[in-house]
Image (cartoon, rainbow, N blue to C red; front, side, top):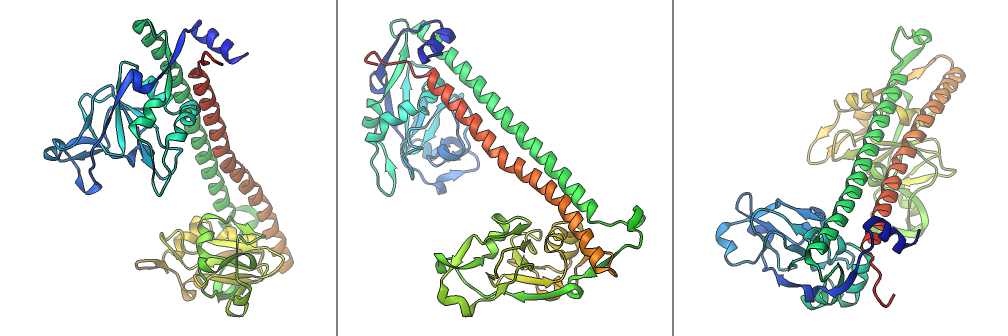
Length: 432
């Protein structure tokens, strides 16, 4: 179905005229106030920075307040006005609007405009987020350290007015489009919430089975007497890394693992390093060998301390001085999985030094125990470790596929919503 056919089917044929925002409304610029002017209680206000992070298409409550005495020196948006952000670090966010539907007025920052018109404020706000509007104002945005647009630039942008000669019918059509878009918005939000809930359930299920599998509880069939808990100090040795900084990074050099990356960019294991440093640093670094488990010794939380990744690359990799390479003779992925369990986290918490930065040193790590299946039969032990790793790899792959699929699915739904929003507000211009 063509765009026009879609519109005709949905709205029953709409007469439309594109008019400049300056011709159908007026802009009032806010006055400057700073974050130190904000108080916990007082007169409602909107700071321009909040337009990017807090406000959506409409709002009836303010996030922040200023002192009532200061209000007389500032400017406000009235009920039914659209607050438009006019400055920012990127040009993409400039021009976004929020229909103010609060019972009273709201103070606005000087990097915002209040747009007053006889149009449906939500209709205007939705339109301000379309690609049609963004493309119109792009040429009027001044670029610099902070990008900005003036009232004059905003005034030139045109908005489609359905049935311009019949205000009552026009508002009815605007309200109908708003209702459709709100339905799309609600459906998109509901789906995102359901997907997030599904992921949380699957992750919780995976964590439960991982911890259960690695608990080797006595009396559980063949495991009665078939496992021994040994300390890391008994099972291997720790090699501390050497310091390097992100200023040492290059595109092509020595492969390294920075401790900060283990929290955010690595999973249970890795075969390729994500960063490299200068070749001339080779002699000053320390390395993890293939099969070692790289462990952090610091973290913002107790859970982060001791975060581990099994290094399965073909060659050695340099490690940061806030990391240890745990060298052992077990299955490295088995060890890494053990270090994620609730029992390991609970035991390591006993040895974490809780200072400004949580720290766990070698003497603490050495005392933490992990299970060793069939400790008196090395071949059987390694075979069992490999079997458990295979099971956990499948769980991990499923969980990661959901984790990766969730943002992608939400992004696809968001793009679908944006497509229909722009289509609803695309009323072809006469010359088209």
